[in-house]
Image (cartoon, rainbow, N blue to C red; front, top):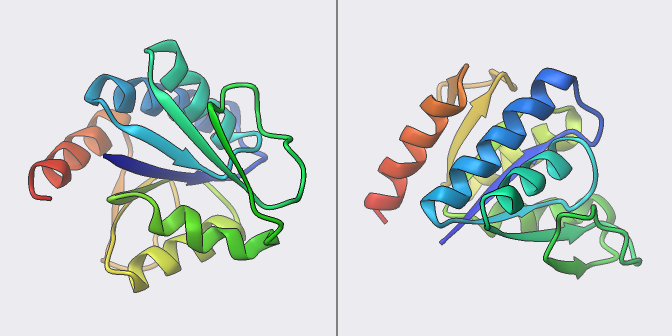
Length: 149
């Protein structure tokens, strides 16, 4: 199963640490991590997943193979921000860590697609986004989601 992780290419050190911890936990659950493949939260979640032997996929916005060094499978789209649809659609659920307007667009797309969206210190835009403050809370919800698929 695949879990989509979204968040800013520029992030705080706290967001980076949480994303790295999330990646470790997802790998331990056996999840494939899908993200936008660039820096910040995307790099951190991939790094964490790789530390625990996980598999990572980066869906890139541009036309070059410029993924972060922790991406196993690079998908070059040339779609710019439209690649956000692919990132949101590719997971059985979506986890946002922090994030700016790109993350907000992915949250909106995921909700429109009927995906469960978990936000770790992220956008609090609706009751449909499950807001949590810890990675453990997020992983618990992800496990529940996996068991109900």
